[in-house]
Structure formats: C-alpha cells, structure tokens
Length: 303
Image 1 (tube, rainbow, N blue to C red):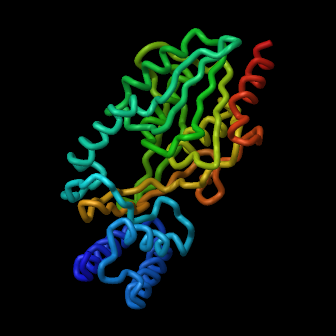
Image 2 (image 1 turned 45 degrees about the vertical axis):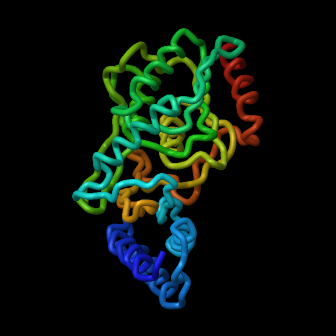
Image 3 (image 1 turned 135 degrees about the vertical axis):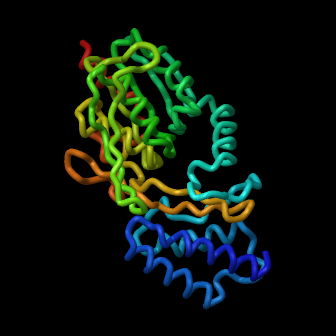
C-alpha cells in the first residue's frame, strides 16, 4: 500500500479508538500509534497483513487488551457503513455464511461412556444465526446423566448465545447471568436465562463440566465464567486468555477491520470480570487431559 492509504487507515483507526471503553487508555494508545507512525514504523509499501500486525502490537502495548486490534481479513469485505457497525447487513451476511460452513459453531456432539453427553463449541454465533444448531446439540444431550461442554477451542462469540446456552442448563425461572456496560450510551444491558427454550431443558440438576484451555477467549470465557459463578458447572482445564471487552467491528479497508472494545462485562454478583486474568478452572489440568478428567469427575458424582 502507498503511504497515503496507510495514513488514511491509521487515521480512521485512531478516530474509532476514541470510543474505547476506558478513555484514558484509548488516549495513551493513540499517542503510541502516532509516535510509531512519525518514526516510520508504518512505511510506504507495507502490506495490509503486516500493517495489521504492527498497529495491533502498538494498540495492545498499553494494557494488553486482546480485543483491541487492527484485524487482517483474508477475504475482501465491503466497507462498513452506517452508525451501528455491529449491525451492518454485509457483516451479518458474511457471519451467516461462515456459521453455515461451520455447523453453527458446534463442531461435535456425541455420547460418551457412562451416559455422558459431549458438546464441543468452537464459536458462539448469535442465536439468530446459529440458534437451531445449538438447540439441536442440546436436544441430543437430553437423556444423558451428565454433560461435558468443551470450550477449549472456543474463540468467542455473542453474549446472547451465551444466555441461550445457559438457558438450557437451568430451568424456566430466569437467572441473572451477566451485565455489559456500554460506554457510548452510558447504559448497562442485563443478560438473563430465558423462560423458554426450543426443545427440552437439560435442567439445573444434572451435573455439567466445562473444559477450558489457554486459547479459550471472549464469549467462551463468559460462558465458563457465568456457569462457574453461579455454581452450575465445574471448570476443568487451563486458565483462559482473559478478554472481557465486547467490541465494535468496523471494516475500514477491504482487508482490514478495526475491532474497538466499547463495552465491558460486569458480574451482577461481584462487579468483576475476567479481563487480563482469564477464567481460572476449578480443576487445573493440561488442556489435553481435561476431557478424561471431566469424565472421571462426572462419573464420580453420578456413582
């Protein structure tokens, strides 16, 4: 890319950074990026993938927020338009295509020895996109004596899908799961389980184990966090990556997307979240051993 195009991309990224959930951190990150540009770090001829890496390193240098980045997209995508980038029709259509190719984020459903259901989730797409896939997985889990939810490869997703999944694991009485504070509106949205789910409830009585790894991130962490805080599941595996800031995504170049955390999760019980610290398991084992350990744990509870 030519320097004029690079400067335009950097300028747009810094403009969006003004919406960062912590204004002081956003201001400091802005200063770092401006200094890097002045020093020639984003040189003429830098390709989009390299620029994304360099700018992301600089953005994250202040507080390590893994959601704050300039993201390279291999597929050329339409530029974001409108005032609500996360509701952009083109992005929604692309997400629906990706979800369809990946079974709605549910990569495996099976029945294990001891009548344990196993559901592996790699991405928590919004219910409007992947609700039927998740509902089918949870329906297949019905009839099992215990459940393993594998989030070891889950890289994130929608808080609405987190609430959708949690709804199956409680009952018809709504349960307050999580809150998300949005800086732009200075409002907090509450997330509760639903009093209705498509298909049967797994219910609040049968034991649940959740598998985590050092790769589990964002929405996957929220699902693990909510179930652990509410005492509904035993977490088994590794401490997760530590990203609790939902983002606005804005396509500012056909191959570059700015992801700006404009909100933060807030536990209605403690006021805390897992940003920077990750979600710590109840039973700490290497990720590759987590499934065997979870099966042992559930079978012992059911014995």
